[in-house]
Image (cartoon, rainbow, N blue to C red; front, side, top):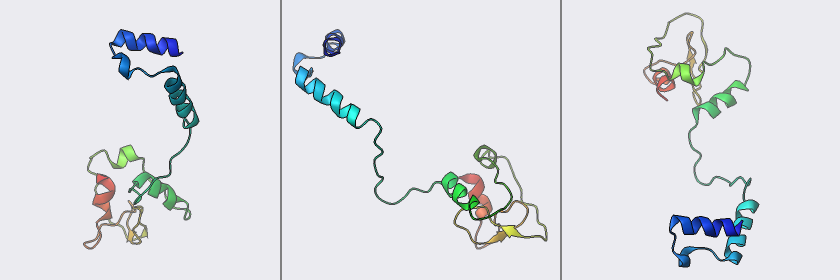
Length: 118
């Protein structure tokens, strides 16, 4: 494998001083193989992921299904329909109630627009 690496470096015109020695090459291969399937812990603030939040919200109890990401983000005008029956809002992080679409559309909290734009 190292011979193939050296031949490839020569064909690509890499200077000899930048080509790994046999020892360095073996160390690099070993390092890559040891770290191949390791999952690094994420650091810092968690990113906002709507799909993950929707999956978490589904586990809270039985409710109507949420349309797929492609449907609710297709920039087609999904206008709200007002009905008397209320339900739980599907937008992650919202505690409000909403109509048929199950996404809040009130002056204080416009989850409807946020749900369709993210």
